Length: 319
Image 1 (cartoon, rainbow, N blue to C red):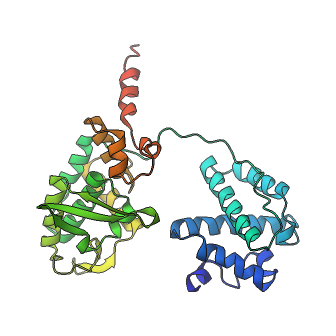
Image 2: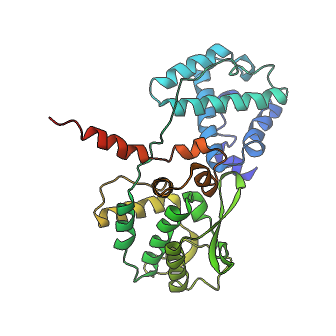
Image 3: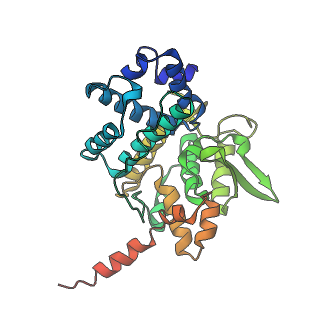
């Protein structure tokens, strides 16, 4: 319950919830505490729910039980004027799930969001910028590995490229999550939904991880974080995990120093690895398994091979 207070304290509960009964307030907080385990989803849903309920207050809705489909539909229409379709659909999902929870708890008689349709949105290719193989190699080779921070940065980027790891899973690793099995180095990742995923290392990744672990003297600290921050003024690793925002800033610095213009982010290296793998004859099914995707449809969003085909076709416009 302590973490919930940081999201919705008694002083910041949406007006409609703060004015409701204690039972309603408890059920509302339990939705975020019991029904949503992913912290990123919890944060996004709490923002959407708070915004919707505050809008309802300005629309003179008197109580949580007075919210009707027309209110939800009007709010969604307002959202589509300023937000992208995927964001609006996520906000609608948050409202639907909240009211499902309230219906089950007998707080409201029906779910007003059930009959409301969100904006149409179809995606065949992801928007994540992707590096080509030459750029990825250029970036890795450009990093000065004479310091622990250089060894760390090269190992982190290589991990995402060669194992298709999400940044959250990579930064959540312990030193013990890099281990030897059948005379080969493996990595253990904990992906979204708490799914444990294990992968053998590409020989380049194996070299980079060993160089980092030995160079930073992490081998004996098996319970320590694998990718820690660098202590201010000490140039030494700490036991504090590197934050995603700091990893993103690091990537921007490394990209700029390497002279690479592509606007890559934390997620770009996962997409880069998948695309290069598929270009070199890998199968979509194996790529999905390596990326720990439950469906190949998700993996297809990371497949950017068609970008090169499109470029080749554009160059045929000889004028």
